[in-house]
Length: 132
Image 1 (cartoon, one colour):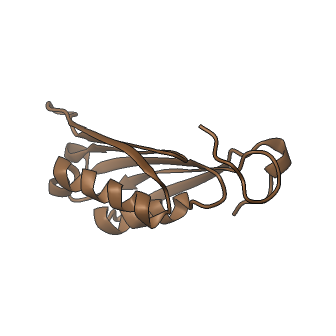
Image 2 (cartoon, rainbow, N blue to C red):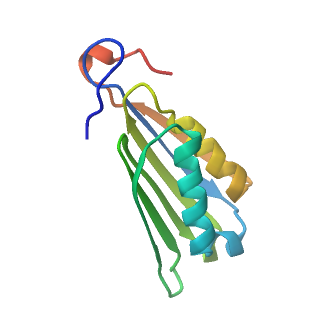
């Protein structure tokens, strides 16, 4: 999914992803809450929400998955409450949205004790190096 650029030519792609360790299991298993905070994260990051879906899975390794389709690309949150663990994957195209803001907002809500955050510049060649 591509979004028109205000400046330059090509595609500005920003991909932030990571692991959240030692989160509260009650939060990680709350589908309603997680859908709400993913929706709010899209607003915080200046993304345009198209559709929001969430699922709760049972079993020992069960958890919650929430996927937000945004005009700029997507946000994905997956949780494993029994391991106190969650993963985030946030990708945006365009220079108006900020996936780092969405990541940080979700971390504020999930309150992990440890975080591994990664950033990948997914821009086309003409835009490489112009992102944080």
